[in-house]
Amino acid sequence: MECGWTSICLKDLISYLPDGILVSILSRLEIEQAARTSALARRWRYLWTFTSSLIFKFCDWRIVDHEDKLFGLKCRQFVDWVNHILKFHRGMIIDEFSIQFCLDDNIFKSDIDGWINFAFRKRVKRLKFNFRCTWTNGNWNYPLTAHILHYHRLDSLTSLYLCHVDVTREVLEYILFVCPLLEELSILHSRSLNFIQVSSYLLQLETLELNLSWGLKKLRYFPRFPKLRNLRQLELMLNPGVSMLLCAYLLRASPLLRMLKIEFWDFKDSTKETKIRRPKHLHKSLKVLELNGFIGCKADLQIASYILGSTVSLQEIIIDPSHPNKWAPEDPDTQQLARMRARQHLETRLPFGTQLVLR
Image 1 (tube, one colour):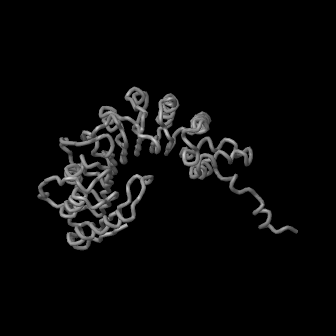
Image 2: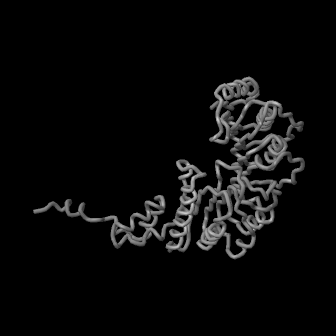
Image 3: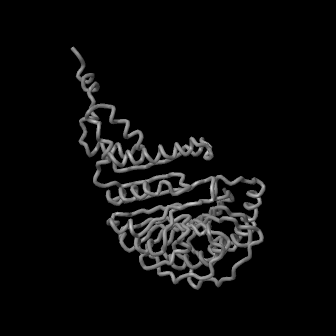
């Protein structure tokens, strides 16, 4: 007589779960893994096509010479594979749509247009396009136009990340106007957006990431910032031309900000200080200040000192001398000097209860 437990264990109990639960499980897998489940049984054949998470990463650039013809073939295969997956997708909505792809020319523009149309047609919540090319200076960015956006409702969007996508101020303000649920916004390496002229539409954001380190030599004028009362996390990438004033203005405009992360790009020892008045009212909510690419020059020391003197509840200031560009060569002696300067100039200025962390 067979044991009852044995017969139960031999059954495929997972396949008896409702479709909604199985699709939820598949949505937590990478798309390649989810698609492979179609070979398990007839029951699983099309379940992966209803996944609510579509994340595509083109990683072959790490192992293939980009000047080799094989690399171009790999790019074309990746784009065709993405198009194939999207063609068979049957879900009505998607929670996340993310593509990381090395884009260096416009031969795939029509494909990207199709990806954007697909995402908004599926009422996407979190959208991420990262077209960064590590070996070039970014000879071509994908242009996001208002024309392609006007065909879709965007009110489901809660998070938007665009890297090496050209976004004009008009397009950005349109997005902010029609996306009442948008909480996270990242615009990186946009040639068309010299500086976000902050409007009242930014008031709904809880997380804001701005890259002002690329394509800007000097920023002399700033718009009037409204009070960003929902903003909790702010990340800034700065070059020496846009540094002290921007930090001061945004800090004043974000009374409930809890975390401020700053990346310093191309800061040199010869950078001059910027004169600015001390704030009349101290910031009461900022808890964590993180400074990456810190070298201990006049400019980054002044920013750190200003923020330290502007807060009353800061718990931690993190100093990381590593270059924000992870592919840039590192000099251990330079990093050690930066840590020494941070300890020398900042440790005595720490508010009571604030910890200095040196990475």
